[in-house]
Amino acid sequence: MKIGILTYFDGINYGAFAQVYALQSKLTALGFDTEVIAYKGRKHEINEYKSLFLTKKYKIFINNFEKLRVFRNAQKSLNKTLAFSRGSRISNLNFDKIIIGSDEVWNFKNDLFGLDLTYFGEGFIKKNSVISYAASFGSILASDYIPDEVKNNLLKFSAVSVRDDNSFKLVSNFLTDVKKVTDPTFLYDFKEELIDMAEYQYLLFYGITLQQDDKLFIREIKNFASKRNLRIVSVGYFHQWADINFVNIDPFKWLSYIKNADFIVTNMFHGTIFSIKFNKSFVTIASKRRENKVKSLLRDFNLESRLLTSKINLEFKDKITAEIDYKSVNLKIDELISYSENFLIENLNS
Image 1 (cartoon, rainbow, N blue to C red):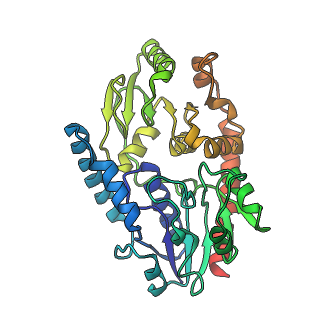
Image 2: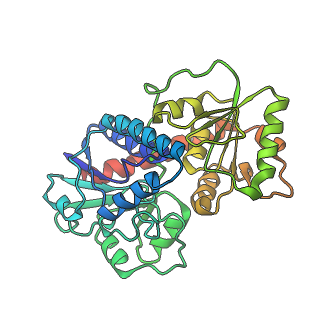
């Protein structure tokens, strides 16, 4: 059986790469023949390159160019189709089933691509059996207006699954049989891809720039690290207040730095996922853009206490050092993996 995977796969986003790599690796381990559908709309492509290279800051330009090169090299590990920009071409591809997701493929308010109906099956759903796996609407709320063409296309899916509570509520407004599954990065162990990293002890920060009003977080991170003789290592993004920055590392080294950290501070969804997956001591700084999916993820494992939201009563030290009952967390992970694998197997074999 030939399975196509339609998702974001070729940006310079660590979480986006990890999720498609994990899903394809897992499906291969389950015995399915898979290809990532190398589709990217022209609007998406143009806006992405503008965001990377339309800058007057030479250092940012060079960093983005190098990061793109590193990601292009990592993406060679994916089994994928030839690249194309017209969604209608998907109907000409020889797939028995197509999986749409994971990631925010249904966030039609995303600045880069807007409403791209290809991610809702437009143009090929009549010919192909289509399911979604762990798809997300991102910051779009269940109370927001949902275009009719989005609803009508989703009604044609063979099976629908999402990865967060907000997306579940949203789709449940017009679909009766919706499943909530786990992000594909939980399905794959990455053991063969991980390597040992620095010999020194470090606190890892993975996240977008903390803004001016987040100085309190920076101060607490630096104080905590200093008292424990930890270096502050930032991965993926440059932060002047970090001791060491690895901006352009490949996705597997990025994972390895997370795996080998002593403590983790993040404001990213997949930074939170891998902190949990690797059983790390961590805190997540609340981010309005990622609030829906991060809160849902933490609720899944009864880890809401790891979220930092208050700049007045920060309690950073107490939260990051508080013991996590990873025995119960890992049992929940195993439960979610089993449920999610069954969803894939049942709907791909049916």
